[in-house]
Image 1 (spheres, rainbow, N blue to C red):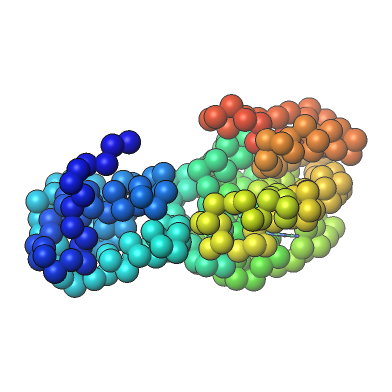
Image 2: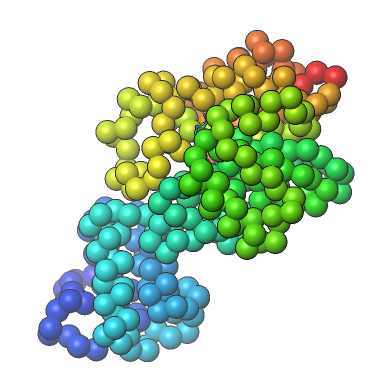
Length: 301
Ligand SMILES: C[S@@+](CC[C@H](N)C(=O)[O-])C[C@H]1O[C@@H](n2cnc3c(N)ncnc32)[C@H](O)[C@@H]1O
């Protein structure tokens, strides 16, 4: 990507008092590029729209509009935290869209990732009838993203969403309420299957933590701002997936299905465990980049 030359003055500079939206976007995009941020222009737009209290698309209609000093002060602090501290945009603006649903996020919860929509697609295929009554377990619900996407697409489903983190469940509760779905989602705190002992589900879906502790120091700096409990799962990253696969058959109703997100390096191994656990129709599903990122399977009858 080419960086325009000469570089414009910083928005902090006393030399330039009047900044338009387009000038600020250009300056900030270059600044973020220099910081090594791949989505520099997009991030600049999201943060400026947030600072101005408008939709991102509004910026395009108002490119020549001047930005006031107080608006610039708000924006400058956001730019500093994004470029300097590498805080993710979702954490700065407190919101992230997932499955076209506007979700609230906060420091105690993982901001949902676009690739997790592959998990939702796989889960919905396991519940093909949109109106059928179904009991669904979302294990490790975080912001509630997966549970809410399924509830949105399957009006007949009742979802139990669990998490080991009470802080995450609080955000999931707020999201369920904001989206008018709290009646259909039961939130329970606890590890793995402990909160749902004795229950059976037609679908178990989970995006558990699956990053290996050994990778911690080599990860992008943005991940320092996400809760470690949502990312890391033991030395090989399989500390949650392993017991999840071993225990899932016991909570599946006859003919029920399971869909699990994982890293592409773990896919073959976890699929093997599913077979060993007696699950049927074990299948790997690929993300848009062609990597195997979700394993699905069915329980026995
Ligand atoms: C990768 S995040 C996924 C969050 C959300 N489902 C999503 O896709 O955006 C994993 C979640 O699992 C939770 N978690 C970690 N260990 C757990 C355990 N043993 N039992 C239940 N939840 C756990 C974390 O607190 C975190 O919210």
